[in-house]
Image (cartoon, rainbow, N blue to C red; front, side, top):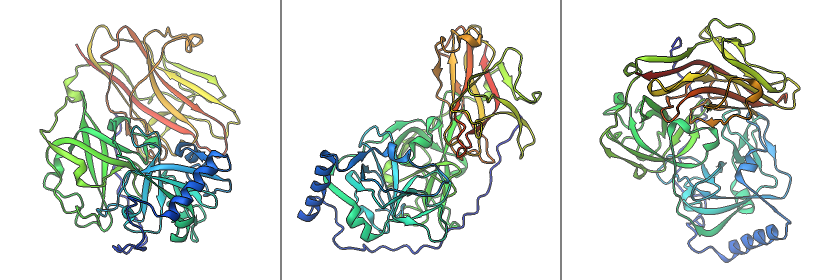
Length: 474
């Protein structure tokens, strides 16, 4: 491994906020039984959807209308989005916002709502089914480029690329609560597999521990004015998968000691203020169940065989490595050598921006790896990007590919559960894949890095790849 991960100190400049504990409107109570007027408004919305006067759009489809970093999109059509509230500011860990997801259990998408209310849990309580009539509201980001797609009320007066909160008056005419209040069942996930598509969903991560150096620490660093980020880890067969738990200084559990054992955390997936990396955010410490023994794992030093190691240092121009395949299935772009500005080391890069190609599909496939003569094989690599809007990178394995480019699509390929950098996460940073267990595969295996993108000028669509390695035991 030729690159050490660089931890960058981010200085967050945030407009000073007063933490207000009052409820703006005494009528904003938990709607066990909604008032007649609110029921009538919701009934009218549902009737309009059934008669096709309004279009009910999914959260996933709504988010696809907006591209991170672009100017906010004003909704001018008669569309409605429905969701189930999955966040709560009752304990002070959210401020003038709530999230909702598309289903109470096994959600596929979630979205943030910026709203000029505090104590939103009184009106939009956990599990509440909410309909939002979107015409004349905006889809965008509170902090341009942070990757947290949000419903807001207007364009910011200081930055035309950002939105501001939905006003209290807009709430009355755009937000409609149902009498349904479902139980939000956290979706079981692994830290290694979390990505930008999970933002806004409520998840459960098992086998979690806090880093050993956090023993005796509290959720919030007492020197922090706003948010504190604490590293959490899950033990894998080899190594750890890492993520960040972010807690507001205004949370009423800010000074609680972090648990020293292991167990489960249920939390909402979001991103840090600048959008550099994914974070988990708690509703309550009741969702932290960590009284078990700490897990343990193997380290790379426990493995004595290296089956594959490629750092791309001797490459230049188009990637050409003996017995590897750099294949353009569609489009004109292929994997090329790239020198990282910050580390001055080489990597492989693929991107389709400004290519004018309607579609780009490009494969970088390793040589065949014999998995029959070793035990406990694990794959790892690193990825980075600037922005990967409109593109996708996945890693796959095949044990029946013969190395001939003509037979790529006739071979059987399985997507591996690797952590791949999400949009914007890799700016100045390299993300480790974690160690992917290949022990269930046998024969000669090929590992493929498959890129899918297009040449739209509004997309950067660039990924970098480095330090591909497979280790094993004899």
